Length: 142
Image 1 (spheres, helix red, strand yellow):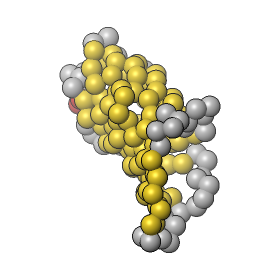
Image 2 (image 1 turned 90 degrees about the horizontal axis):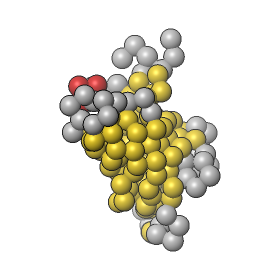
Image 3 (image 1 turned 135 degrees about the horizontal axis):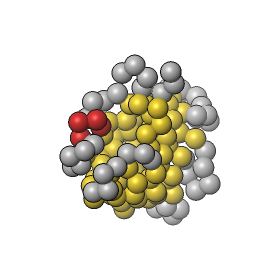
């Protein structure tokens, strides 16, 4: 059985708001974004304030850490929030397609909390029009 898609986040990067630095230890790039979320367990938007921070050390290992809040409704139709902490590591440039991530979720949804707080998920990043499309899957057999 294959991993089960639970949500898809369509990221819209905010042009002109990216901040970068390059120094002797490596590079840091912070990419603010918003977006929309669709899935069988949740539908909503990425709240303002989401940011993908990419740190590349001097030997070329890149750590991607995206942190953002989703605001919308859970599968029971009740308003809720989901905080996403999504981590990835890469040693190639450009990024692999799709790139793989490990998400952690926190939520105030009574219906989703028992499910999302189990840490049995993985993410994939695919190219999109205005930023990546992030798909979250429940890992088969987890």
